[in-house]
Image 1: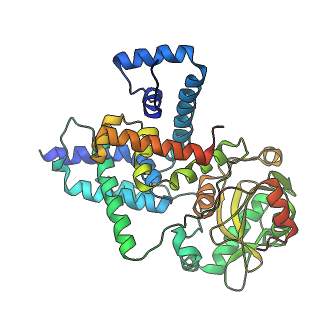
Image 2: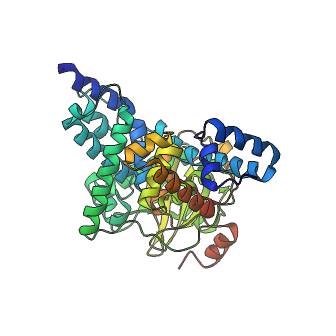
Image 3: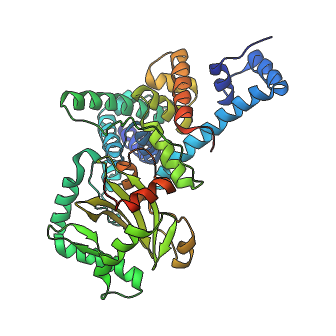
Length: 164
Length: 250
């Protein structure tokens, strides 16, 4: 098994762009997202033996990221650190067809979802996991995942409107 | 007649329904335009959300992450983007300031000023400080020429080779605008009645001729700097006009 740790390392390296993207759906800023990826990799590397070869490595990493993020949120709350303020101002759909501006308003809307909802949006809509896979990552029943996703999508719809 | 709830329609849009339920739903969709519209809207939303995060995959992975997984520390090219933005939004400008100071403060502002100025003028040196300069505290601020454009140009327009793309209110309640000149672009926000440049980068590609008309594509680091600061969404043309007439004060 000497090589398996090296093998996992190589495979995680190949996943880095997707891990960073999932991080971006959980955290508001790029720095927080990359810090999260870093923490998750550090955790993963000391427990590579817990990953079962043949199962999805991306799901395993997403799960480590998700639990790490929840821990991070709690410890920041304990430390009294405030997050980017959730201003109440109504969210006006951007009336521009610029794809960059649209992407920005979508990311903003996702950032305003609750933490649980962000995770399901990230896993299913962005990372393309099936409901079953996403439910396993989050360690929740599929039914819970489905209703959580439906609520998140409804909230996004209200913030963004229908026009693409 | 079967009724279909939101979760079932969503599951169908996501390709998660199989067997008899799926056959029944597909049959219903064939005869019900409104039902089909709801499914189509869900599919469109999925694409829109996925597209909003798609760019992350193309970003260069930060060295600190690759290094964790590398067996050897092979040389990695340095990032070409100069990001003066605060590392975390909640720590405000202080972080940006301190890393800026570590860079060599004034000297570094001048280097960046010359780079931006040269992009704009086609040659280095003279006139660069008209675009960017630094204040007494070593902060990078808009020079006369850039300040004038930021004060007066509506978003989506260019003047004197400087284009303005977006105006918005940041989380501290101040106005901010993005601008580009030649290959360089930046984000400036009102601080103490001046346009303080919080982030600058060299654009991927934005020839001057195209930029004059295009809404333009901003370098990712600038968009992210906007993302980190924006409160709500970009100003509408009308909100922007009011801001301009009010001297960008709040």
